[in-house]
Length: 196
Image (tube, rainbow, N blue to C red; front, side):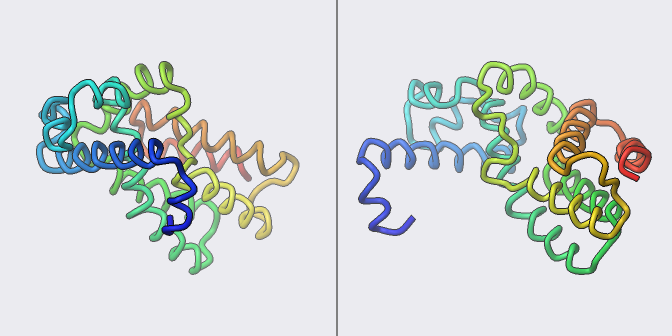
């Protein structure tokens, strides 16, 4: 956001965004250094130099901070690697495997990821559906659609189902399998039988 854009945003909104950013940065650092389980909401509030009340106003549970953390890891580590890999013209399944493997390596590498992901499903995604958009600020769903479109153009993805519907199917399948922490090979085998 440049200076002119920030001036068009009301002061109250700019202050809110600064507070949210401080809270998220503090939580992300503590998740990385102390681990998810060991990080407390009090520690996050202290590190963010904000009150507990303010923290709980924006993030009612610790797991509600996990989704922004996972999204940021995706943007920082996964997305650039996948974009570079797509330049090598892999098959659709190779590209999806690369994407899902990089997500596993960079996003779900934390021992607490399984617990936090299940907590997200129970607490955040149900109670705060507005935070559930995994494509917002990440391009995750867009990346899947790009891979599937390329696959259709190459002839290794069926064309009798609209691209948007295929993208939705693959995304839902991936999220549901990840929430159960199943092996990537199970996902790929299912995709192989459904996409081709």
